Length: 169
Image (tube, helix red, strand yellow):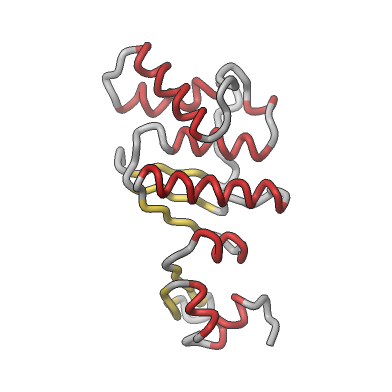
């Protein structure tokens, strides 16, 4: 599990803990780092997601977008090889969602991590995805896999085209 980080749809931050304490939790649980090393990593991870200086804030004191970024800092705490995102832009306004997509792309490139995202947000699919999997709820099977832009240009199944075009012909 140390090789994986997860950003839950709601951010899943502990409301009774500061952002620093939330980010520190996996470090304190799964490493033998000293308190000073943990503090240094907390500052680094929060800075990577644009939250430098927010260590002592509680989740209720920051916006929803900031909560998502704090959850991302916690997901990255152990430098995972794979980051899982569950509907990362759910509940965000379009501008905040785009900024989060850009941050995910930047972190994917700079950290060299594999990013797995479960989303229904087309903008995010096209902005982030370079290999997508489409699951059919009727047959409970995978009906397509590949670059979303290629799948849009040449869909292997009408359901994929309908999804990628929001039902437009």
